[in-house]
Length: 354
Length: 270
Ligand SMILES: Nc1ncnc2c1ncn2[C@@H]1O[C@H](COP(=O)(O)OP(=O)(O)O)[C@@H](O)[C@H]1O
Ligand SMILES: [Mg+2]
Image 1 (cartoon, each protein chain N blue to C red):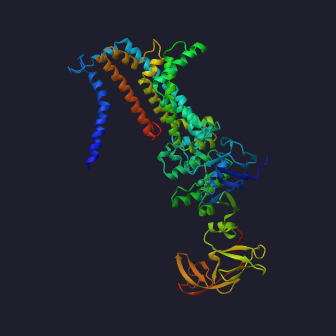
Image 2 (tube, rainbow over the protein chains, first blue to last red; image 1 turned 45 degrees about the vertical axis):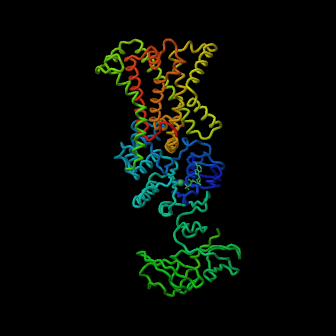
Image 3 (spheres, chains in turn red, brown; image 1 turned 30 degrees about the horizontal axis):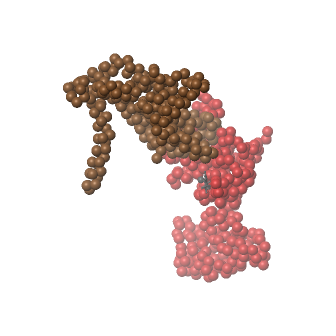
């Protein structure tokens, strides 16, 4: 049988708790071997979506297809996916090795094979030396590794991780990001990682699904989300941006922006003339120059030095505050109070219709 | 220090004196050599020695221990099931009724429980042929029925304080519901079950009323021996007997408290 192209596919899934809609009609396909991040603010339904995939919650409507088989009604212990809980949920009455062995024993594995698989999994996360410890004798980072080993030992088709980095300090977070990426490459299975941190999502994922209020608003590779967000929400999630309200002009490829006092040239395709949109321009796409597709004059209000770059806040004549990021040393630096000219190309303007 | 804590301490002290001095007096007199309660003639283990030669006492002790052990075990099994259902099966229909039915034995007078048990046993004997007369078996059933209520509450309280995520993780790792129960849930609530068992053991050991209603001629328990002996007059031997019962109960309760404290559980729901 040929391997299906998607590891897990969710079709129009809904779930509510009492009156609270947690997941509101989500469709999502995770490819084989893919590292997908579910990104969204706290309470937007990420954990619920993950629990639906694992079978720990029953869907109200919709279907869940895992490795080509419809598993909407399959109980969790028969699904070839494993979930790493945000709390890690290690079994307190078992040692590290027993925790990792638990899932394998359920498949009837025993003896030397079991021991080898447990050691393998613990070595992958560099925890083999602490195999005899109890969970309450481990640090937060060590618990996370054991929880990870316990999941990967089962060699699931899809590994689901709920905020795996939430309890780790900054240095450990960065290391863990890289390790999770490497681990995915070595194991060759799909990872779905829930996070509320856009940096986590950007650095680890092949694709990011941005969630808001129980819905998936955009699924795309990190670069595309950054360069071409589909909504203000997505744009605001990924780094700083200048966002202004505008109205599509009757002249072709232009929008009128009152805050800038400018008819902005746009390269992207636009909706019908007269519709209101928002435009977004990344701070690093704006230059100090008076030649370009779009140019405005303004006064520097503030300068923030950030090492390799500086951020300038410029007040345009019509009132808009424009944020610009420039590499230090590549141009004569401006100071507070300077009158400056700013310009950016039409291709730098992203049109947000939602 | 203000005067108020001093006053409070005095009241507390007085309360404790009233609670414990009589019991301590019983234990102290049990070591008195003299036959007369009011006259201390010297320390002696004489009355304990006499107990050991007393067939009636030995029989009653054996009966009490057998009844307590069996009824505590049955109550733990049944009470754990009830506690699991209450804590882990959500809001099923009739949950409130179930809770109420469980709590009833806690507030019903013991005399009523004993009497109704007796009526049930007699009726069952006439219609089903079981139990054939009353004895150890009927006391065990009666005690288990009462004690399972306590255990249901202890187990429920423990489970409610325990996150479900471990059980969910086990299920996610491929364990069937039965395996989750035996490999994860039961080991995690084992201390609460142990404490519950000890509590049930003590409840049974100390019970006079229900045992009197449901016992037969060959199944006299320790409290029954003490009660009937006292009616013939207090003897130092009875003090020794009572001391044995007090110490057994205290040890069990202490052990139960220790088991509960180890994992931060509660003895009874608040
Ligand atoms: N078991 C539950 N019972 C009731 N409401 C729940 C339950 N689980 C989640 N919710 C609600 O569903 C919404 C989404 O929750 P969750 O999936 O945990 O969000 P996230 O993981 O993105 O922070 C929240 O409003 C939350 O209160
Ligand atoms: Mg969450």
